Image (cartoon, rainbow, N blue to C red; front, side, top):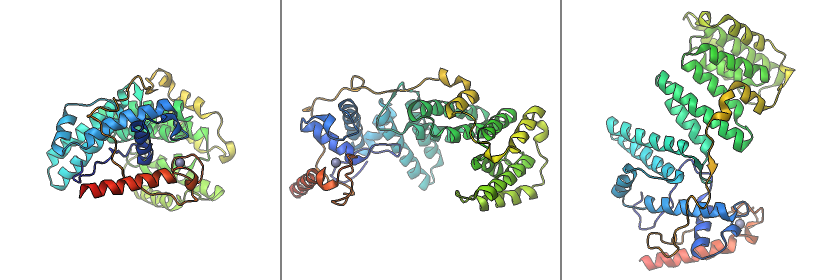
Length: 378
Ligand SMILES: [Zn+2]
């Protein structure tokens, strides 16, 4: 997708490995060097997977635009290539929107989304992608369109939560559980959403984000009274604990809007025991602190997590390296290393060494080759 003579590496917003790293690994591969010794945190197996996946994606990325689009419409395999395909589809969508072609934009959006859903459904995980961003973005895009899409969104959120628990120790679990509560409310399931929120508040009464959710979104669900209670509770917490997240203004503005709201509240539709439970949680001492591990909380709030399919990391056998001499894959042309660190700064490869003691010489050599390559183009 570029019109210069100089081929580019494929990229997507969901990548978790930098172009510098991909470049270094591809060069080591074509030079026949040991792939396990290029980047300290990347072993030989992971490096081989990265090289195989990135070469195939680069090949597609550098086809003439019409051919890229034809190839994508035929469908594509491999999560990284699908993510790159989604990226291309979304940029064509933007292009169509700018030209006022809403119908075509919608088609491209749907194609991009279908690639993302295929990624989430495939059994393996590429080391090149942030899956949690994809789970969340797909859920976010589907929610609120209609109850059926919102239920699908809830399914993806739960898969994202299972992934986060398994691979990242649940470091994003409170946010995902909060999203889950919000999505239930959006789907019209007030009891499930509020029941979940009550247990989140109980888990940590000093987590201001639970009160913030009530303050900024509850008018949308017709829960104005509860929104006011949440906003007031959040402001009390800030009063007691300080305002490190700088939420005071937002809470005050939301409170003001909620108090002016004329609509009748839907609190009457909520099961009385759910309402009582949430109000009891809102009256807890801020010092009560997290009562159990995040993992236990997740399993309590979403007991089906263990049954959900979990991706397994890709292995070299899943994506064999291409033949080094195949005309299908060219060695990457030399390119100027982007954003070189200072000589005494830590190297980009993550070795922890100073740049001058690590990849500096290799990068300078690459730059010289790039200049020679440019001269040859003239
Ligand atoms: Zn280095």
